[in-house]
Length: 360
Image (cartoon, rainbow, N blue to C red; front, top):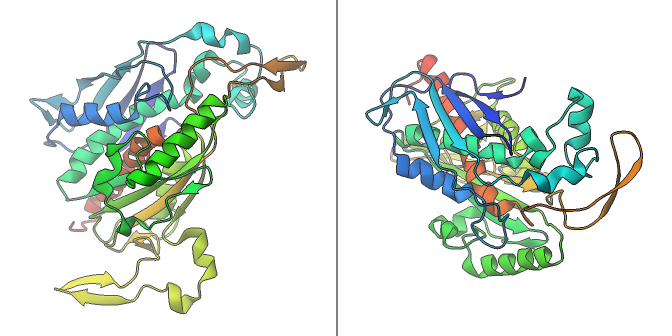
């Protein structure tokens, strides 16, 4: 249960952090989509561990294999199977928590729900599963590229250190020029130093990833339960460590009056546009043709390199010691995951719109 995402363009992920491999099956991808393996591999490289000293030092190349659904570099319209072999597991690092529950992890809830859990790296609850999402999201991006739709996520906050600039004030092409993935190079260096100090303190810190989707046509989304922003929210909240989602003006919008917040329409060269975009590109649950933008809040990583009080599976008091290789801040590696989940949502809604005979 709960391993499938999407209705028409749907994915099923499988695998555990310390198992033989992780992977994904994609259903519903149309035939004829050109597949660029270099692009897919680069997407995975943006998420993989070991990129810098401010992320986990687990060494995984995350080399993806496409097992089915692609022939002569194009999708065939049949299920696409993708697998990524695990190479650098250190399961012995987790023997000390085989019967203990790590604070703020999924250990206790998994043990209670299933009566069994794979404690090695968190098993299925590990963020390693998101590599499969990024692989699937890369396929979705390649499909959506044909429609001129693009995805741009970046780190806008680490702890209490914020970028404090609207995405329209930034050059988003600068995002990948630093290890933090913040498009403002000066703030990025401050964020890097902050994360590095947290790492030296044997602690962790949270942050915010901002997502921007450009080129989305008008009409994607459904008016009741399957609103576009609701599905984006579900997609983001399904990512490990995510604690919050807001789109458009978000929580700041409550400070405004309706006369300030309403997005006035106008026509430019025959195209309907809005003078402002507090709606975040979505009105009534349906895209209005403007940029879609949103923020995703990530909590501090639960594993810290310090002793913490807890209990074991027998109800006894216990001390959990931090071991293994973990991110002091997850947001730099979360950027491609946010983009991937965004692409999966838009790809699904685009295909739904086509079945409703909407021309896009």
